[in-house]
Image: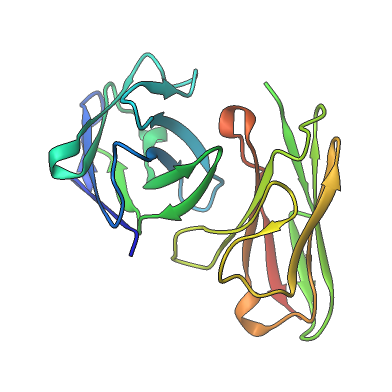
Length: 116
Length: 105
């Protein structure tokens, strides 16, 4: 069955770089697209970016200068890197399978706290 | 960018009641809309896509409707397991509504 699982550090210092990994199973990254969505505690959802089945990427314009999404298809992994983190980047980070334009499967999420 | 205004922000309803949640787009989104349910401490789950298509495995008491700029999610015969926050999402730039927190009265 389709599964996605995020992993990465729970605590990042301000101004540092966040690195997260999404490991997927039950589907191929060369036939499906994956997105990252985040949710600050108690708040709404924000789409961050996507990596398409062909390997190209799209980013939320508000994050584009700080964000990079890549993948390793041989390991079924998608990576998120975001630099210059600030306290407002504290959030739960979800990876999702992007089915055309909506998100049909979600990972459990990983909580990232930006604090010194 | 297209903005999504979701209402109400919170809602209290009784078991068995019918509930409606609305999303208003700032311009015509041509039914390019999905609805998600997020239970406390869990990740969101897809309920409805393309404004009115029920995702596999979602109970038939959930339905979506609308066109143009106005869309709604309807929950018939509210169950206790429906307590959650509901979000709409439009396809252009993947923008989400602010959410509707549904509680039991």
